[in-house]
View 1: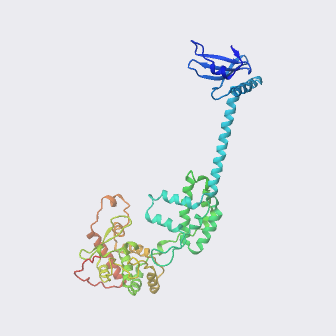
View 2: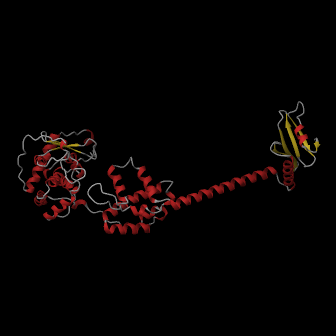
View 3: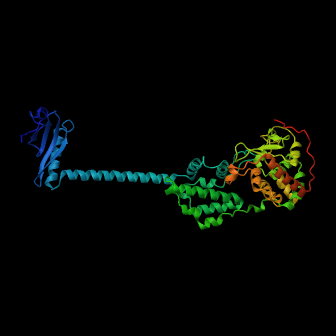
Length: 443
């Protein structure tokens, strides 16, 4: 092997021998340091030595990247490793493995720190917002409204009626960090809310429990929640029991006193509205949104909005109900109008109904209870369940109801008329003939 004292000039002038792929030049100053050049002119510093009788050759780098001093220093370092009985290649591999391990450990620590930071700052309200957005296309409007109302901050002007909205029972929980929600905090929350609004407290617990279960199933929240907290026995003991709805209904014997009190109200619009609910089984908003153009006195029918069917549903206009509607003032497009309401129609008939119940000496019955009353008392005239469901706007729950049975309005009118006649008989009301020649008044 040719050995010379490396200089910058000798390194730059060293060429590959003719008819060879590569040539070597060795340094006399640093043992094992060599310069390799190839036929295409590429040059690199190398280190070569023997370990356990076997030659080891390691590339140091290009002269363009390593100056001579650095190359000699690296060669001496590699020679020292061999003198200690180690293989420089293995030492390098071990160092790289350790470096990768250190980097991985640093990344893991950073990830853990980031996860802990998220854990310490993640709020219930942020997860709640994601939860509602996730289900926005899956839930019905009423179910979504329940979630929004029970989690609202309150203090805003009511859309219906006067005054401000009340803070929802879920609002205090939404102000907490997820890591702070525990069985103890939930128990205290439920106990406090149940003291003043038991039904809302129970509903709020049911909605929050479903939300917490959803969080536990999501990778981004699973480490932040303890699912057992919402199943805690002490917490469940504080949740008010669901009140039976079997008492939220009028009975046959209540008809004389209820009709007398409702007909005696000093507001004929409210009086007609309450009677219409009991006579049709319609939902309160369906009847409140009835327009004059939806009522056809000639063909004895009316269209009401329906939360199940987008196009609404057509109901028979029975004789007594037709008389009630025809006697109402036509102030605007709404059948049940109100000169004091912002939108021009009846918005809060609950208070006068409660007053009528008090006059009649009857227990509290909600406006929705009048809808239940229709379904309950319809059995007295043996009205078929399918007829009842179609008049009330219940979604069909059987294949035949969905796809095969199409009852004409005339058939509904037969049974609906029987029901109205029977109700009036129980109430002691004599049905007078409706005025002839009534026409639709369009707003």
